[in-house]
Image (cartoon, rainbow, N blue to C red):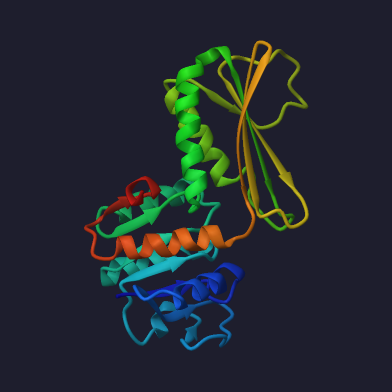
Length: 249
């Protein structure tokens, strides 16, 4: 049985994770951490890690990038694993995650959805097969409350395609001020924010007289929560290291 603490427990994703865990018999929530603690389930919710009454096996974080230092500090001090499912980390924060993974097991990926990770692998294979004869554009759509743009998932997809093309591509985020033809080495990345869109990602491979499109659409946030819970169970008992969805699959 994996014992977990949910960081960001009172948020929308925290509550969804709590519901999913309550329906399983291989993992249990022993507590939650939230800057605005509210009692909403049968486990206690506190405002800081220092208030926890017992140690978990794994921390699941779906809160905010600003919480990273506190999470890593607590986990490093006590030898606890963590699933970092928050998006919007800076390059400096990603380096902190990599450094911490040398001492504790960390699960870190831009998207917890099984479908998105399949899309990522398909995009990589398509890019390797099609080569520079096809231009690549990525369009991501999210709800109007999402702060970071482009999404971490869009960047993950771009990185996979870039890897397949030998790492020579550069990302173009905005074209309105660019007065030149599109370069073959470009990967266009475009963000749409509106309404309650959970998450949609589309990859367009545009060639001469033909277009190939790969896409994924999330109908609810539950797909990300299920992935995070599966990751927590997977991570329990693992040695120090940086794990991702490819390891889980």
